[in-house]
Length: 436
Image 1: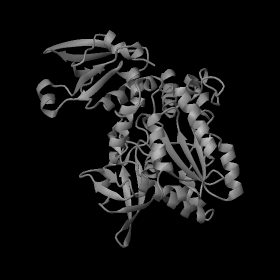
Image 2: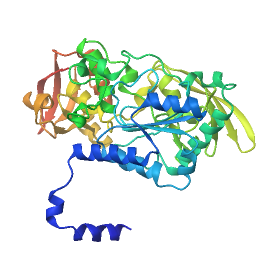
Image 3: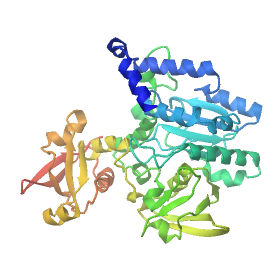
Image 4: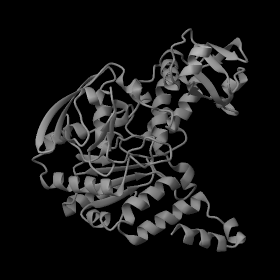
């Protein structure tokens, strides 16, 4: 197949390549195509709810920002081309939401650093489960799969069949109110966006993308010179952060448990199937993330119902204070904004262990931003290759995430924080401005 595609591309005249569709054209063509096919309800949640009430079917809502081509690719791959998935979709009222303008944030809460999220729910708004997980900027392998989606859809149909008798078990799947009801009400978005997409003007520019919700929430605290909540910095913890590697082809089956991890301490083992967490039925890795997301940053206990071979086992997963900070946030799109606020646009990398002892430093400046607010570190005198000896009087920062966490909680906009670096064997002190 790949060779055929390459051959086709080689045969396309250069003039045709020069007339590549604009992003605006792609969005409009996508809408036209989806509406012509008639299978998906396009960007109309009210119509979806009405159809679900009328038909008695459960709802499947896909949040797919525009004009994200990577997201479109995943959407097509998972939803439209698989012979197992399509018959399952026929049993749902399927709604495709292509922008978060006007989205009810109490109802639709998900990891905003991904641009593809699936909600499985009842017509009355009760959430059955979620699908769509990400732990890498571009690589989805290990987080989502076609068999995994099929299992999630099948599980949602099972829950729907027993609804509303099982409604109490689903209470924990419902979101709580955020700072504002919908994205366009956040101060950093209010003047630029409305609650609707502008199909009569520039639809691309009118769209509030998923990641902009998370950015707006963090900006809300930063602009008030308040600490950004730990749950917003280390949001939607991936199971990997507690040492749990799950099979993307299953709902919540354990592939591996990392040695010394919180998951191992809880007694989890390879091949365990996690049926419920805090009494919530699980349909996917995203549902596991949802339970973790609901846990306080200062820790707590999660109850686990495990299927181990033919036995049912009850376990307790203890989360200590600061457990969220074990997660990697460097891959997230939101870290770009956090670097603007806290590192002046620098990207920091960890030094190898042998170099840490040699230079008495843990971090190195991998790159320095060149433009706008991301050039603040450059303008303050920082260079790629500088070794970080200390920041704000501390030499204990082990990772870039440690730095971001400290600066987002202690170093507010307007301050200039002293950073000691090592450059060509010489120690230098520079003042790094903290920003909104």
